[in-house]
Image 1 (tube, rainbow, N blue to C red):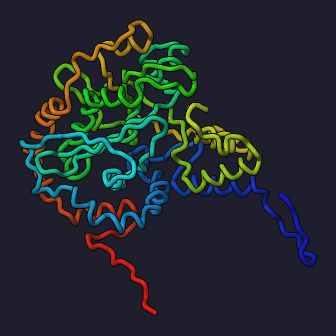
Image 2 (cartoon, rainbow, N blue to C red):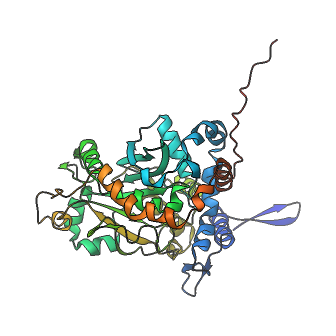
Length: 409
């Protein structure tokens, strides 16, 4: 702490480290975190509502950046969302459409992600994004996206049972579903389970092979014939009721394999993260702008942890205590043997197409739910407006904004 004399008065000036510590402590208190005797964070209420509240600031930050996008694009994009009366459960036919950057489909994907109750990660490294359509009515049913996995995930590594060397060489064959779910009103019909089951399909496997099958590994520098052996995903809300029991016949499409350690950076919002990054840049630390894939398992975690250490805060504050359930989708009958290097080729002979899996999943979950619970039929365009407005903090409408015209001189 520095001191400055002003007309005989002594004014204390906080150092940048002290100011950052104050910001972090105030933020953690504001979102509801407390610390135990060892300085480890925890949420007093172990519930999904408490987790949503902890995510609220980060979600609001990201959504507020989309204000212009929502106001200008929502009226037209909202036409792709179904009302309850447009859904005919016995005729629902899921279809995947690959999303390319710079298209209206990418804008629709963004809008759908803004209906989520927690912030959606943009993913990093290799990415495949999809819209899930109901081909019966040409309305959006859900979205899914897979990207590069984190390097360290204990429940995954314990389940596979591989060595450190095997993980380094074989992680290229794994992806992580960082977005996975149904949009309303399909989510009321267990559409999330239907969308999740589409991960294990020939189309996803083939798209990965075409896009990333023969590429130079960023970490190893070697040319690898990557094949999609498995996809992991993690519930954002602790234990997942949607991803559990995603099984068709005798085949697990998602298998629960444990929980995350409760370590990460979700409780550090973007604005505060940028403050930490700016501090590292001032210190000329390489992590400030070194975020290419291959430089480590998770750049944001490295930045946050390093900044905490340099300003004099415990790295244990990265232990937020929210343990998320982890699932794995095994694409082949010999996924584990392949990932451990015991088998040279994947056996994907029992992979089904999207049409086949979609029909089985709708018969298993969507149609029975529609018969038991008919509330989805009441879903209207106004409900969508209210949901997006609440989730984003931006008031949207179905009316297109007026174009600005230049005043004549």
